Length: 369
Image (cartoon, rainbow, N blue to C red; front, side, top):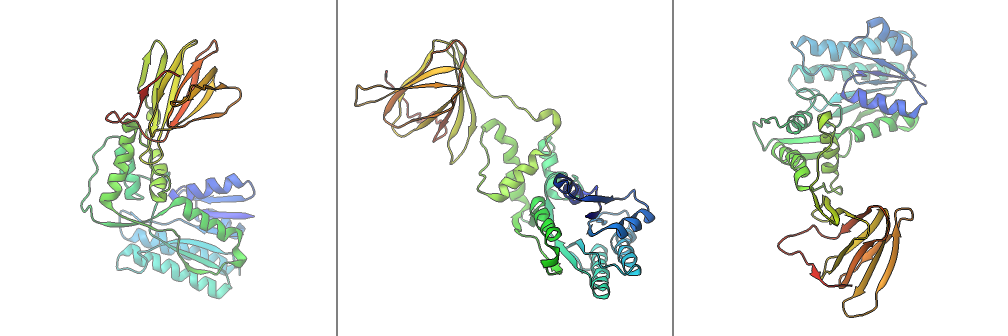
């Protein structure tokens, strides 16, 4: 199947082409600004499906709106009509289509050209009036405020907000692609016409800035996002894509002594804390209990023994653990416990606790197992 993508090097185009290539079942015809009119004509005639994503939204002069939006679309439809083809077309329009701006007028004119082609050639045309789209590979200072803010905040550059109460309506690039590809895969069953992408997320410019700034500071606080908030989850994936390549890593504070080390890795407001405990050979760590706090121990390297005892009992429970036979040991509240390195190499333990450590209320009471 020959799939033509105009605007293949643009924000949406890059994401779409990369996804199509991952399927390894399409012959993808890519057209972008560098392509000649004859190359476009040839690709249009070869295509079994057309994603018409090319367009102009920030030209040097207004005439370019009509050249890049209306005239380009008319060229595609005129070629198809001249050869009596009814190739389905998916077109990315805008929620501004039809407003009084040159951009809105040019997008509406492109829609009209597509609808005329659909009626004349009995072709299916899918017109998506998109709000602000965000996600990886958007160009800062061009595609969206999200891209610009992500880029600037990741580089400690100041951001400028004229009106923090300005409401934004956003759709995520993967949600856009999901619905686009649904059209491609099920074209014969889809009704053509004006379509919308869901879900649409609404927030103010000030709220957006606060969320993205929180991502920046999370490296110091070790806090991670709440993945059950889909907007925050998608914004965080977007933000990380704008990190400078030489700043993808960040250090953690290792609390070291002769016994080994203890390092907090991730903290959450509602999912507890993850830490890494390193025990030297022959070392025993712990010998304490908790009133409410619970833990899970997972040894990923080395050999050890976890011992527990109810504070009301003399019976000691023992669990042999090693990094070659992964198993989780639950540490209930009210059980004093320790872990001993019984091997000849460092014992590495991943620990999950149901709450982040609070210095003012550590809930930790010394008691030998």
